[in-house]
Image 1 (cartoon, rainbow, N blue to C red):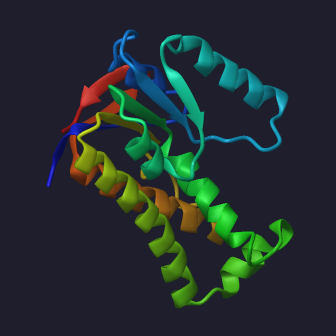
Image 2 (cartoon, one colour):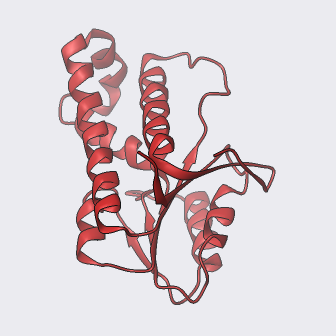
Length: 196
C-alpha cells in the first residue's frame, strides 16, 4: 500500500540527490534532518562533506545524527517532516555493528565466506525488520518523510562477498521503501526525474 507522506529520492554518488531532497521541504518548516552517516573516526574529507551538507540546511531545522532508534525519534518528536539522509549508511552501520560482534574487522571477509544461510537470513531479517519499524511508524503517525538513498543496481557485480552482501541488502531496502512511497525520484547530474 502506497503512503502519500513518503518520498524516496535515489541517485548515484554526487548526483545532487541530497540537495534535491532538501528542496522538497520549505526552509520555514519544522524538519528533522536524520543524518545516518555517523562518523566514529572522521577524516578531513568526511568532515568537509558534513560541513557542506550542514551549511545548506535551514537554521530552523534540527539534526539528529543517528542510525538507530529512528522509529522512536519519529514517535517522540512530531514535526512537519523528516529527511533521512541516507538509507545506505543506515544499512551499512547496522550491518557492521552486527558483524563486528561476531568477528574482527580484519576477518569480516573470512567470516562472510563461511557464514551459513541461517546467519545471512538472520542478518537480512534484522536489517529489514529495522526498516519495517521505521516505515510502519512513519505511516501510522502520518509524518511526512523524505528518504535519500543510492541507486546500487547500475554498476558491475562487486568483487568481494562483503560488497555483494551489502549491495543486495541495499537493493532490497530500496525496493521496500520504493514500494511504499507515493513519490520516487531519480536524480542524475542534479536533474530530478519523477519515476513514481
